[in-house]
Amino acid sequence: MKQFFKMSLMAVAVAVAVTGCQKEDTKAEQPAQVELKTFEQQSGYAIGLSMGRYISNTLARQQELGVTLANDVILRGVQDGLAKQPKMSDEELEKALKAYDKKINEAAAKKAEDDAKANLEKGKKFLEENAKKEGVKVTKSGLQYQVITEGKGDKPKASDVVKVHYTGTLIDGTKFDSSLDRNEPAEFPLDHVIPGWTEGVQLMTVGSKYKLFLPSELAYGEQGAGSIPPNSVLQFEVELLEIVKPDAKAEAKPADAKK
Image (tube, rainbow, N blue to C red; front, side, top):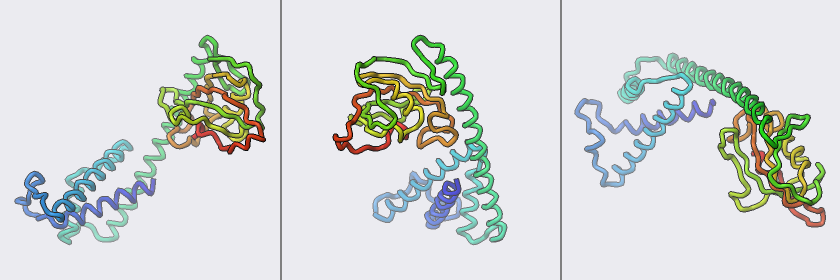
């Protein structure tokens, strides 16, 4: 979040530099009247437009955290900076920016905590309802699974390397990963992935296709991973294609499904 703060300030600083070529009087040219013929005109406008959009998006995200900054006040600060007529001393400026940084970080941490708690409750409710559905079985660990197709091959051990096709989604249906989309099966040691995968795939025979429902503690727990929020229940549709034999010399790698 500190990086987020620094980037937003940097965008403002660049915007200040760009605005330096503008007149301060009320007769300053409006955007619709700006000539965009020369290299300098096109470059200046492009930089200003890019920075304006960046600042706008940054302020919108901050507003989601409960921090609202007024555009007119920001612009007044820019104008005062250009005119070298600040209404704050350097010490007051530094104090204000540090307070801003602290406020943003605290708000972001609070939002992350609230979101994690909400995910935990949603996941718990989902699993309770899902366990009642026809064909869904629950293991001692809390893993839920549903047989789509039952194969006739061998079952893998935790120490085996397996080859699978899979699609992973959140409980709201949002897809976060799929080997099918890449048109390339995933191959990995079964004891090198998240616990829900290690347990769930061992239930399958080669040729089987299961749907696995992983409680957050069998997935990424309180930390989350990439686009997967903390405390998320994960759903995977998995097809076990093969138990890779050691002499196949396949390059084993962790399943992308856990990212």
